[in-house]
Structure formats: structure tokens, C-alpha cells
Image (tube, rainbow, N blue to C red):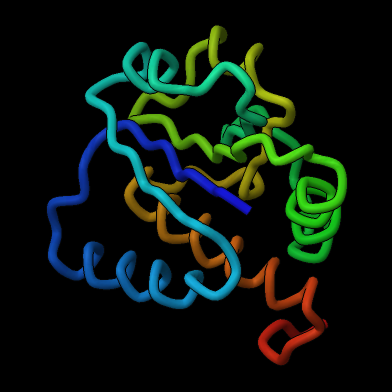
Length: 143
């Protein structure tokens, strides 16, 4: 499965870069992962393949569990996605525009907390990793 994490902005802090690299390494057995950085949301939208299945992390989204994320998004894409690229989008400091929200298959929120977009980037990678571990029944996630 091809997964892209499409983000607005760049990681500058070395500790965030190192953490991202750790999750990229962990995800290699599960998917082909690309991380694309755009200067703004217009550029992010323009870079999306027309057939991409877009999921946006957004404050207006629904809260879901890790198990729900695993089965309802990752598992469903593996089973019924038809090989379309799966893109998880993270906006910049001001969040997403209505144009991106309308393009997304689903809006997902990390609850009602406001979280810096650089941290959300790492949280999304961790949830993707956790989701694949759940789908394979491998140890990592605990209920």
C-alpha cells in the first residue's frame, strides 16, 4: 500500500526529524511511505494525485479510536481502496481550508485539544504504525 503524509511546512528541529525517521523505518515492512512538504495548502492540494484517497487531520473532524483507524481506514483501504494512493494531510498553523476539507474522504481529529502541527505529524505516523500492527495482530497496541 502506498501512503503519503502530505504536510504544510517543514520540520526544522533535529529531534522531530529523528523521531520522524524512526517511524519511517518502522513503517517500511508495512507500506511504501512518502512524506511531502508544501509551502502552503494550495501547493499541497495541487500536488495530490487525482485518484488519491485523502484523509485530513482537522480540528473539525471526528474522533476515532486507534482500532477504528486501523480497521476503518487502513484496513478498508487495503481491502477496497483499489490501489489508489492514500494521503493523510496535515495543515499548517492555521489548519485546513474548506477546499481541502471538501476534497477529503474523512476528517479526523485528535480530540478537542489544539496540538502543534509539527507534533501532529509525528502522532499521525505513530498511528499509522500502530494501525498496521493492529491489523496484523502483532504486539504493540493494548486495549
